[in-house]
Image (cartoon, rainbow, N blue to C red; front, top):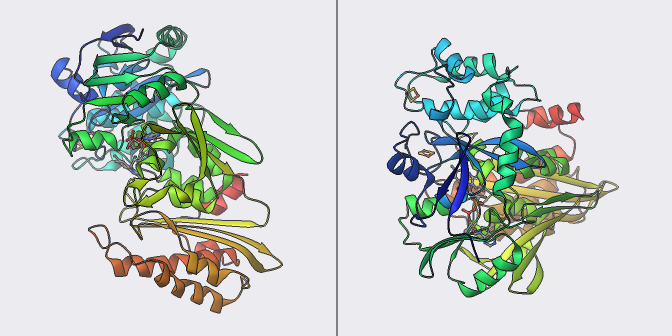
Length: 493
Ligand SMILES: Cc1cc2nc3c(=O)[nH]c(=O)nc-3n(C[C@H](O)[C@H](O)[C@H](O)COP(=O)(O)OP(=O)(O)OC[C@H]3O[C@@H](n4cnc5c(N)ncnc54)[C@H](O)[C@@H]3O)c2cc1C
Ligand code: FES
Ligand code: FES
């Protein structure tokens, strides 16, 4: 028997919601049902951050607070979490230190963005344990747009209060909250609704596999950072959701010297560290993936399964030779990720099949990796062109080459002509670089859309190949990078 409602914590109490339309967003529930209108709606697509709320969850044995976009999160995803909104921060009439700092620094004008900014900074405040610099504050605020105050006073307020945050009421009830969250984790399947329209959240892979076999037409829901937009912007008439958020094991990450295994439900925020451990460029890619809110919800599995031609992880994982683990009913199979993408938004995923995990072999000592994402805006923007390259070099000669692109075709794809041009050439040979760049035209007739023209994409693609080869050949990266993160990352090692 499945539980017929969802349960989550708010203001120290268990909230139970048994009757809701499966498509209800968290933001609509807050604003319309609860009249909690402090949380704002700006874009309704995860970009502006006005709707930011914070979720508390147990991660690796401790309570972690993360910012999320309530506009694209479905209410059913709340099950088992602690929900904190801007109305919940002040205690006994006293502003939370984050709010007080914003007041002191004049960090708000019209105030529309302010609740979201408060919540993003509240999440940063709760992080503790790592130095808070201007850069970390900017990262934390990349998903919050303020159109009138200007960011200087907001950043100043954040530096004042988040660098050495004094204990607050949330910290003092940390243990009690963790215990309450554990009590909510009852291992039951959740099923709200009827056979024709429901929000289901199975608790384990067996019940997930069964439910999905019974309802192969249902929408699988991971972090909802894509699916949420189908609801709010696409107005898609989705009626059946199967959430993966409670399936035990799908969120696991196993990092060994040979392989990094990321469960499909590993969020980008959690995967970022292990991926950065493979290569600093992969870490940088993840830092620029959406915003803190998108990374806290969005998952590795969702990014792959969505099959977007401009999804960021696929090209990188293709060059690394990643393997996907899939399951349909009791059948399990593995598949190289490069074979998963068949055509525009068409993947090799059978009816009723789900992605369990992705296995990423670790590169060897002779492997050289470069990953570049080109966007109109540095932070929180989707790629116009994305290139990933892995070369194995022995005695100055390229013995294997894997190069993949996003944004250049209907699917993320290897550039086989480029690879062929590189193979057996010497890394120091400038003529080989030019030949590899030229070969790109044989691989792709790029997309032409509002993000970038076909001609621009092709030229940028060629330039990225040459840039990667120049760096691997030893060109100083301050000649090729705007931000010298590679040196910074190595210096920190
Ligand atoms: C503001 C914003 C910024 C973004 N920035 C970026 C960016 O920088 N780079 C980028 O690549 N993307 C970006 N995205 C897109 C999105 O965040 C990613 O694609 C994300 O990884 C999707 O993961 P999710 O868990 O939210 O997937 P969901 O939205 O839950 O699901 C996406 C799709 O995958 C399917 N699915 C999910 N999990 C599984 C599974 N285990 N098995 C089978 N099918 C599954 C779902 O049914 C759905 O079709 C952005 C989105 C927003 C809103
Ligand atoms: S309303 Fe803009 S991110 Fe949610
Ligand atoms: S204070 Fe007006 S949008 Fe930020």
